[in-house]
Image 1 (cartoon, rainbow, N blue to C red):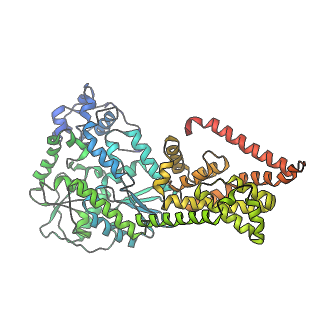
Image 2 (cartoon, rainbow, N blue to C red; image 1 turned 90 degrees about the vertical axis):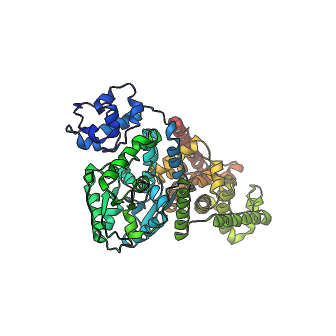
Length: 564
């Protein structure tokens, strides 16, 4: 994985068949040199037996990247049915059930631990974040999956689309730095999140003071994960952490850029468990019974059956309840998410139910008090006139709760223009509609998410969500200027996107003004029209409404293929 990762050759030119790469790779030893495999008819199927570890590149005297060729072959449409379990793991790991994001106000950095470490070492992950938060001001947290599973299985379009969506959401929230604990996450962010500064947690820890919780008087060997093969700064940082804890390191022949894959790379075990196990056997021969320290939770899981292996973070933040059982990993991840939710006071299920209960009581109160009937165009003016000097406040109150219950806003706008005129009518209507849009947004984000999602199914909603992730407040501005969705429903819809509350409110306030002016100015002229007089405000109102309608028609025509 180099650069953006988009352009890879699907053939290997320059392979001299020297066989140097075959000596240490069971896959190449069995099936031939990369150049020979590239000429076979079954090259796509064989590509799924490559661990994609990059050792062949280190050994190649021509400087070729066979692992990139095999990855390109995978994207040509191989059979992914044998990998359905690992793809399910990724799909679940990116679902709302397991993901969690906390972005503190003014923060520009997040900790991204990955999906394996929270499952195998949940307490270590929690303590690690606590320590980092004490050292990095306003540190945020993202519990999510980097989608490297799809990347390595050749699902490049799906991977790129979904990962860029995650990056865009973070950038829109002011995040431009990421600290990762997982080597795969680091590699993905470094290659595809080029707009962000990416560091491993090991580089951060190497420069900070700490106390070791676990020691190994007999010394250890360090296994460098193959995704970080070409990251000498990380190799050095990990060794600095270990030696600073008073632990002696005995290097094995295959370390640093010469490291061996643990056997998990490329998900080869789904097709050929025996081929994948060959890597672990070679590591076992080299370490000769020594304790192994690594800094990849996947490597820890893969090697712990045959070796005494620990994650380097256990030295600093252990011990922990380790588990390699997949069901327990899911449980640990859910428990860790819940723990962070409590820490950051994220809305709980109980809190959401109480919030919805209050809304229901408010709704019943509105109905019982007669406020709902006041929205009738025939009744509302008389009701407001009786309020006297309180009429503007009552009007704003009614307008602010109307969108909350999906009640039509147009009658209110017309009444506002008639009763308060073009100037104050615009002012009161704008304040009320902005308050109503804000309340609906907050309900969707913190209360009735399931109900709102039920109302917003389909491709158009997905397209809308993607556009907000990419363009943020600009989509709010566009929707307010040109009504592409029903006004009341779109207020809830924005609450389900990643946009922040303040940009949403400001964009709503500013860009709702043209439509507000058009309808209020038009309605303020209706009394004169009834009397047979065509005033200047009437012509202005009609002109503005006509212009907005024409702009909406033109935009829909141009964007028809994109939004549907």
